[in-house]
Length: 136
Length: 295
Image (cartoon, rainbow over all chains, first blue to last red; front, top):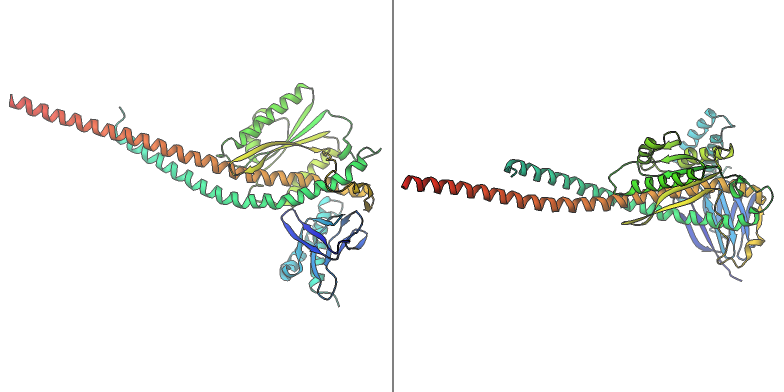
């Protein structure tokens, strides 16, 4: 049994992460799920949240927006709209984005498809903030 | 015999043109590098999406009540063509190649009695096609060369297409664009957008695909994956087309610089000949005058 599997985090802009890892959790639509080597084939939708990579004292994190995850053999592929590593998050920029998005949301009818798009972006921003400044 | 003054002016003007084309070539080369990188960065996502659909779609495609985006609407009367061209010209046969292909396609489809509608991405294609097919153009977009983002494609183009598809505005949609092969070659590519082309999941999964766990259900997953895939396809087409445009412009401008160089050489030779002829004539006249005085 393999002890690692290959994790790819891919956005339309670039490949954000591609490494052999031992463990990962990701925010599925029906709750967080963990993947270890030898997981059975699995397809799910992702919602904005943090992906944890490797267990242990010093895990790495990547915040993803909504997308899809495929687990197949020793490959895990996360196809997401946007993704950012924890160390690359710019708190000030995210905060001002978030404020703008909240204002935008107020101006759009919630039956408009636009609303869902903005709401997703807002959740993505919130997930980033939550990771770097956990609520006490 | 052209006179010296006009020849001089010609040479100067061709030299100016050459300088402009040289600059455009340089700019295109710089832009090409950037868009090529982007095109390559986009591929893993597109490939991943196709694979994911490949493992999901065959299981559902033949089911009763499969979504129309996969199984089709059952009719094939109305066809939508999404045409990707550049916003700017001066890039050789880049735009005209696409436009020619679209014309042929429209003629073919209409000969079969189908109803064709068009969405033009990029203003060059729109400008030309509207002369002939103004009544068939449903939508046109421009400015993606400068400001290209996934969200913009999604909000502007694919939402409109999906909505029209749902309302029965068309039964199948194809898109055509220049696929980037290398800086000097592009490949005109037609692809079906709706219903999607299902590629059989074959390689490397060892027949595991049948045993997938789905969460939520297959139908729900497909329900969100399929519209997404439309955006992904369009985005990748636009990215590829953008890279091709700069490649085509670079090649075209390179040719233009070379042609201008040849023209300058030819003109310079004519100029020198004319100048020499004038000097010779003048000398003859002086000698002739001196001779007549002697006599």
